[in-house]
Image 1 (cartoon, helix red, strand yellow):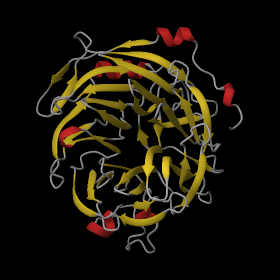
Image 2 (cartoon, rainbow, N blue to C red; image 1 turned 120 degrees about the horizontal axis):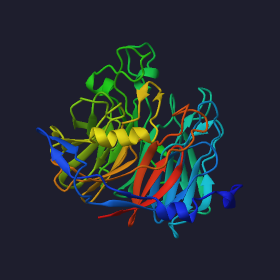
Image 3 (cartoon, rainbow, N blue to C red; image 1 turned 60 degrees about the vertical axis):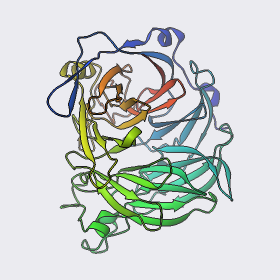
Image 4 (spheres, one colour; image 1 turned 90 degrees about the horizontal axis):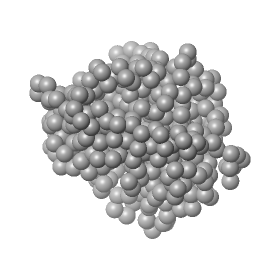
Length: 439
């Protein structure tokens, strides 16, 4: 085990027991396809804070729940690059998450996304973690790494895969038939890797066969510049004004990939044959497509990392023509309450205070990590009329390196996931939260 395993602080019992947040709920549908959370009627649900831990070091990143363990990734600081890797916390006692191990400490890197799945192939059987790795400097190592976490207290590194030019920004791991596949997004690769500015470089989206996780093999790739003739950036010096693959998820079978392709919307590919991805369609490009998640009956939830960017719900049953169902917005009163809790500064040219980072959908409930607006739960039983259930605002916490809110503490919820009856949230500043939604 790494140093300081037994010294991770957790919230005192008084804080854990008193942080109970009631919902401000009941939607009002305004116009066509826009659901606005109304905040004057009786709560339909409430949040209960079960546990909390703030790891040492700088910033937390995404959180992944798997078999009663929370895998908390990490983010680099403004100047520092501590390579804090991934922390694995047992939720056996959810009131006191216990640090089991930390792994993925690759010098000069940060690891903001981790996906864990049970994998069964002819070459491997166990619980596999795929970790995105980005270099803090251009000369630093970058790519993704694979770890056996069948025993979360003793993770074993199986492989490191180098990816140029930007490493793996976000990553996905799935079993597809008898194969295990990693899908990864390498930001702006087609543009940055272009030899002359007119010829597409290596694609942003890449597929690796990790059926034998000690010997990963790239089997496919796809880029909108090469495949659709869509030049990614009018001006490469403006890296957020164009088309790039930011993240990817797949359906349960691993046969259809959903690429959050920034200004192109969510691009849908048939990856039944990973060596030959086939373009099927995409959502309308009204805001930058940052992340996506799938629900029942063709539901696709798309989030946008822009100031005030709102989640959009689509019916993607017909991938050639996804149908926009609704946008889900918070009222100005709810937004103002979040602002009073400490808004974020502009980060890398993006105003993130009211932006939504990631979505998850479990049954008929959608969960959003909404940066300064905290964790939001919505009822999507009728996806054309999503209804706000509850919003939890973690207490504003000190920004250790002035990356997010230089002159004040702030809330900055990055990730959300579910583990049985619990909802896990990761705040870049305040760490891991274990919640329960009471309906």
